[in-house]
Image 1 (cartoon, rainbow, N blue to C red):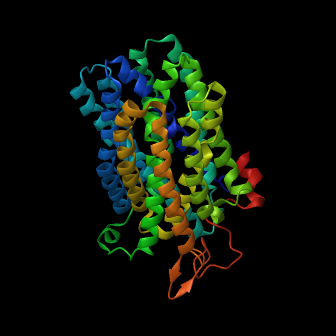
Image 2 (image 1 turned 120 degrees about the vertical axis):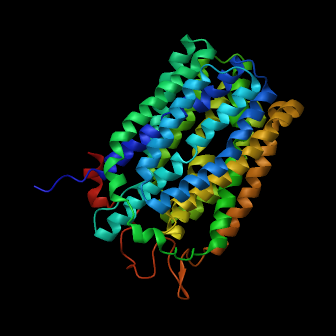
Image 3 (image 1 turned 90 degrees about the vertical axis):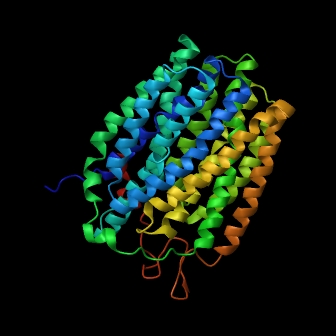
Length: 429
C-alpha cells in the first residue's frame, strides 16, 4: 500500500510549534520588562528597536533560504538561538543590557516566519509540479494561530500564580519545546528542498510586477505597523484599570480565537486566495474601526469585542498579502518575497512602536487615533492594488491571467494553495 501523504498534517504541526511562543510573548513580554524596572517609555524604546533589527535578519535569512533551499535546517538553527537568548535574558538587568539581548532575540526569531512560509510554499510548488494533492495554506496558518491561542490560555493561569519577573522562564520553556518539536517535523521537507550545486550559480528569473508587489507590501506593512500602540500599551492599560492577568490572557485569547476561525474557514467559506485583494481592503478598513473603538477606552466587554475584530485588522491582511506575493514571487523568490514583507513589517512596526511612547504620554488611550490614521493610509494602498489587479495579477507575454492562475494553467485547475473539496475529509481526519 502506498505510504500515506501526511504533508498537510506535518506542516500544520510545525506551524503550531513555531507559533507557540507568540501566545506568551505578545501578552506578557511588556509586563516582564516592567517587572525588570522599565518604565513605559523605556519599554516602548526596547520594543521599537526589535522590528528595526528584524529588517536585516529577515532579508538575510530569507535570501540564504532561497539560495540553498534548506529552509527547515535554518528554522531549527534560529529557533535554537532564540532559546539560548531567552535563557540569558533570565539573568539580565538594566536598560542597555535588556535592549541588547531583546534585539538579539528579535534577530533570531525574525526569519523563522518567512522561512516557514518558504518551506510550506516550496512544498506547494513541488506538489503542483508532481501532480500531488494541493495543500490548504490557510489551514496551516490556522494551526499556528490555534497554537498561539492554546499557549496563551494556558500561560494566563500560570502567569497569575507567578511573579511577573518569572514570566521569562515560561517563554524559555516554550521556545525549547519549539526547537525540539520542529527538529523532528522539518527533516523530510528540508531534504526535499535542497538545491543542486549548479542551481546555486544560475541567475534568478526576473521578478514579475515589482511595483505591484511593492504596493501590496506597503499596504500590509502600514496596517501591521498600526498595531504598535496595541502591542506596547494594551496589557499595561488593562492592568492599570484593574484587570487581572487572567482577563488579560482572555483578551488576547479572544483575538487569537477569532483569528483561528478565520484562517480555518478562509479557504472554504470566504473564497481563499481568490479574494486576496478583498482581504487587503477588509484588513485596512477593519484596523481603522478597531483602533477607533480602543481610542474610546472601552469597558471589559468592549475590550473583548474589539479583540474579536482581529481578523478584520490582522488576519485578513496577512493572508491576502501572503497569497498575492507568493503567486507573484514564484519558485525563485519563495522566501525572499516574504522576507521583504517581513522587513517592511519591521520598518512600519518599529515606527508604530517608537511613536507609541510619546503618543501615550501626550494623549493616553486616544493615541489609538494615530494608529487609525496609519490604517487609513493602508486602506488607500489597498484601493490602488485593487485598481492594478482588476484584470488579474500575473502579466506574462502581454496576457493577463486571473489573480491566481498562470497563463498556461487551465481555468478549471485547482489552486495550488487550497485543498480540493473531495480531499477535505482526508485532510481533516
